[in-house]
Image (cartoon, rainbow, N blue to C red; front, side, top):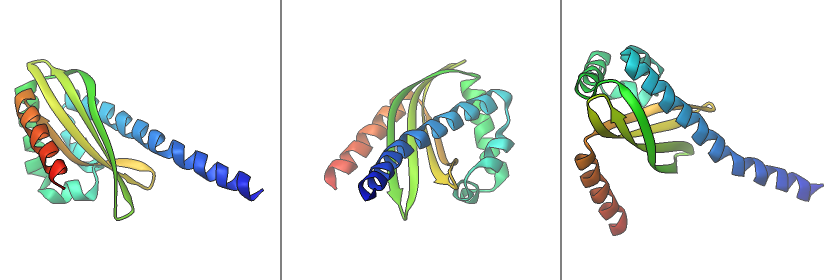
Length: 146
């Protein structure tokens, strides 16, 4: 009986990261829907408290609106990376995408913190493909030095 209980715990914990990743990916889809609808107030309001604390709502919403004007409507995305980390007993899921927008290509990075079983946006970056490549190279270099 004890072995069966341990097996159930192991199986459930093995499924959790995949389930959480699926939830985070669904939030990325929701973000892109809101992007196309210009609903950046909704993005801000539903984000993690750390996202909202980083700057005032007007600044964040204005920056997202400026990016929306620059890149245009979201068209499609292809996953280019994923990372799951645990800090202070909280799970963070970082999802990176190569995207196609109305006015060209972009690279995006979303960081979600699992909070009460729900992924909440902690940070969001949208960069040109060239800047993203430089950023990724610098990040790889930092990790290699650790």
